[in-house]
Length: 108
Image 1: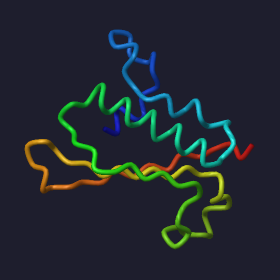
Image 2 (image 1 turned 180 degrees about the vertical axis):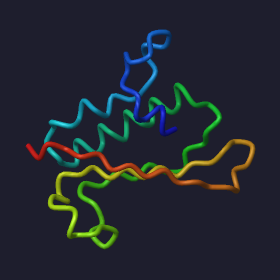
Image 3 (image 1 turned 30 degrees about the horizontal axis):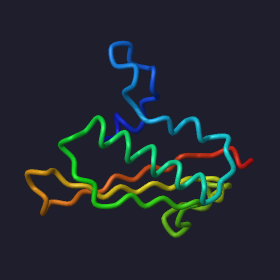
């Protein structure tokens, strides 16, 4: 899933549609519309390219939980899109896994 989410469509010559266009969101305003667009992109890409995965939930928040950070190293926590995907393998639906991504935004 990580490769799918971090690959921009067009990067793979033999699979030009492979990937998720999350990078196109970097300069967009950090609002609920952005979170919904990201959720749709992720859901569509996973359903198209990863049939082995059963998505349980896609949680997208603006900003991040500051309790998880070393505040001495991070200055701007409001312009981050936090993505958490709960998923399992169709053959082992009891084993739920989680993938977390934090995408920096421009803050426009």
